[in-house]
Length: 391
Image (cartoon, rainbow, N blue to C red; front, side):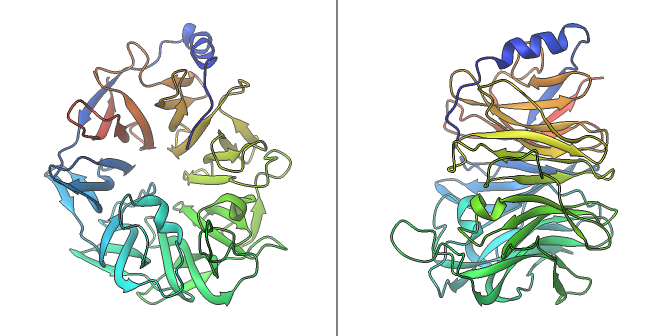
């Protein structure tokens, strides 16, 4: 997905950190079920990590949570794959994500879930799920076949996106080399109640969109654009925020210049947003730019070097942001950013006690704990990680 080098980052980081020493981190690999692919995508203030794991000899992903007593496989809705794919912060033992069902996909759509599974990612309907009290249940749609759930706050709101029954002419459609998306999909809030769902408004002129994160104030962020592929691109023409009253604001207006891939990923309880912007030169998302948005300051890119290629994925209430960037050798490196220290490579000397490579930093909680993923080790395993600040 990433292709551009990041040769000027090291020099920039040295300047940023020369005056103030950066914090050091301890890294733990999280227990797994013996499979080769494991990843942490979410960490809440209780230290519970959510993500996915696999079994020996099997690349099917299952939604997994790591608590103090180990790893827990949440299962699926009957299909081969599931995942907690986005950061979520609720503290009530409620986990949300995506899962394939056993039902064949009737329109041949790839749907959004296809980008988040490694094998058997096509051919099944996929739904957003909520897991609580030891049970996984599917969340409703808006009349279409597929749905997606990304985040749940501490007030019971779950957000995501869901298909309607409308055949949207802005969808890419079925056929060779196409994603197969046919139906319109809209940003939604699920609940309260197991069958409740309501759509959020789009920007004028847009036909589809997605909600990706919600804070405890009820503010929601996401994307608004065309139906397109249902995995971003022209659906992410606009990065938007829905206020508590339901009104929608284009938070990237005037700052995010590409007509694609402008995607908020996380919002904290102060209403600060972290995400990534598309690069006008690359509609494939091979180049993106990590940003943070605040009501007082608007959009701020985390690195302004000409060869920047970065993605922000998580933010805590202190405004610390995590994500990943393309290093000079073309590999991915996880980072942490704040206004005091700037952007720090978690693999820089002295940053951690880890002997492997941290390729993804996907979420950060209010204690500064980070979760993500390692590079593939000598045994072919990618580990889910907990990265903890050292006092």
